[in-house]
View 1 (cartoon, helix red, strand yellow):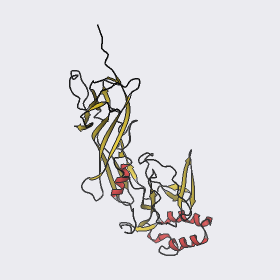
View 2 (cartoon, rainbow, N blue to C red):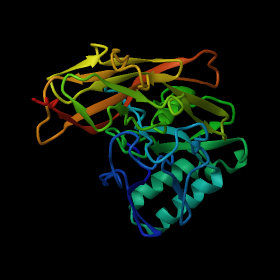
View 3 (tube, rainbow, N blue to C red):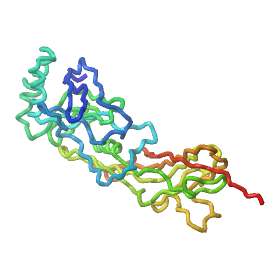
View 4 (spheres, rainbow, N blue to C red):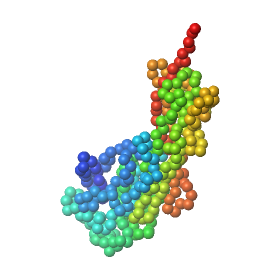
Length: 345
């Protein structure tokens, strides 16, 4: 376990940040907030402490979201498997001066005990293995330390190595697990992907009839590939994660229905999902849609439309696209189904 104090709790209240610091040997690390992957604000990794200021660290991840989905209805894709992005990782965080500013106030407070303070001074000041925080190597490398995924998934507190030095251009020590790589950047960018909402257009709209084929489609202009690029300028690596829509799954919300096609999977053709209804097509079978076999009575059916996104990445040192787990994003909408009224004369 790391003998360096960690941020045990970071609580944001209005415009202030409250930081509780305690030795890792005795503190139970508690995330300031937790949720499903991609549920947070998507602002990248947590930071370190530079004096009395909260900083992002020299190895902070920079996200370029300019080619991401946008608008009120966008949301994060959900991995179609149990896969999750990295919970924590190591990357450059401190220059020699920054590590000194981080540790000296902790030692001065004498709250961590003489023995612990003495061990740390031996490690970072007296030359076992670093002398005077490696100041003679300023500009030639960084102290690496852990970062945490914003959404705090299980394992977020698993990176427990104390800060270690890496010269510029060198790889981190091979025994260090979870040292940042382009592939890990791609996985973290996955959680930043935002895709358009999936409320389908129906014809008839809102209310349909028993046994009447109901056409379903999505605006093809919105369903185009989106991407996010993650980079760490301090060490010159980056990765771009791209999501492309491949199919729309229609689930009618009742067993008393048939889908078109029978699988309920509407393939995307030429960037279009389904086909808009037009006059003269009443006798045709929709390429994407549903036919309800029973009235919804005084209620409605919850039709669910889920788009599957194929996700891949490329980045520093990688020539061809590499796969990541497919993602899904869906939504429910109400469909009222009425009996066809016959007129007796």
